[in-house]
Each structure stands twice: as C-alpha cells, then as structure tokens.
Image (cartoon, rainbow, N blue to C red; front, side, top):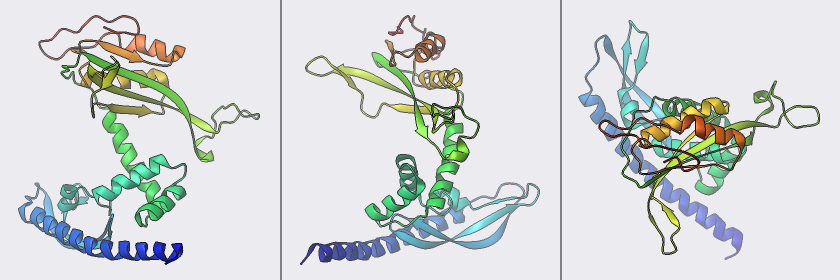
Length: 285
C-alpha cells in the first residue's frame, strides 16, 4: 500500500469513527436538553412559545437538537434555557467553541485557522464563522477579566506578577489612524499588553524556583499601559497579593513596565483579617 492510499484509509476510518461518535453525542445532548426543558421554571413574564430545532455542530460533526423557546413580551427578549445550560456558543458545542477560539487566537489569519481545523481534526468551520465566535467570546472574556477584584487568600510563599508588551499584526482596517514605524508613518501592528500571576511553593534539586502547577492566570489588553497596570493589579488582588508571603514583579526592564509596577503593585488590600505586607523594589515584599 502506497503513502497516498494509507492517507486515504486513515481519513476514511476517521470519518467512520466520527459518524458513530457524532450520533452518540447528538443523542446524549438531546437527552440533556429534554431534562433541562422538563425542569425549567419560567421567570415572571415568560411564556413558552414551542419547540425549535437547532442544527448544532461539535468536534465529530453536525446534529439536530430540539429544545423549548421562551419569550418575554414586555422585554421583547427570548431565549432557549437548554442552550444556556448546555453551554452552547451559538450553534457550537463547548468543546468545538474552545477549539475555534484556540485556533482563532493561534493562527495569523482566520483562513489559516479554518484550514488547520480541517487538516488536523477533520472539522469544517468557515473563516467567517471562526471570526464571529472569536469576537463574541473575546468581548465577553474581556469584560470578565476587567471585573472588580475582591481580595483573595494566598498561602504561597511567593506570588509572581509579570507583564510585557508586544506588537501584534492587525488587518489594515484595524490600524487606520495609528502611527507606526513604516517609512510612511503607518503601522503594521498594534500594541498589546499581556500579564500573568502565578505562585511558587517549592524549588527543584538545584534550588531553582518551580512554578505551581496550573497556578497561572492571565490578563490582556489593547488599552494603554496606564489602563493595563490597574487591570493586572486587580488580577493580583484576586490571587491574594495582599496576603502572599512575598510578591515578585517580573518585567524586562522597560521604563514603562517598571513604573507600572511601582504605581500599581506597591500596596494591595489583604483579605479580611489579614494585614498586607510591605513592598519595595522589584521584590515587592
């Protein structure tokens, strides 16, 4: 059997496996939707308008889901309780929506993301649909990470706060009016700031610090550094900056980032009943 024939066999087997898996996933999700609809208690003003069918898509293929639709005449708003409970992102399952988001963020263009999904997973989602999902989820994620931070506890000896800025390629329409380093003064990229917070409890055999597993949380923003600093501070507060044994700021030495650290990470409120530690320099405790 030659290479091309082997590739064709593998793709045929994948299609056969996906077909059976897709039928099972569709059946399970339909049963879950029926349980949600069966136990749903309409809110005041809501009325059930019947049952509608959604052509959903998951990582194994497309399937139909029938679920109840409720409408509030006073608010002129309607919703499908099962869609919310199942975590559907439009017509996409949570697993596929996550893959779409990852590909949309990782690839330079949505067309490349479309091709990569097709080539690696046999998943067909158009570039336009990937863009729509990324923009919808991204907007909600941005609002979520900008929420006010309530002081959280931290039992780690060291809490690290890190930030950096870089330029990311953008579509021409997203760069209109922006000054850049090209000969004509235009920009090819847009400045984005990225930050993370993580903890450390131990060191390795050589005494090097070991980041706690899955302790890292992230924030990002296209806003100026004067707005990014408070955003990173809020995340550090949520992670327990006020009660950590030591807080360390990790930056590359850029003046703007150093000033951000001094302005935003010197002092933090402690959780109820705990005093915040004194901070100075790069080692803020």
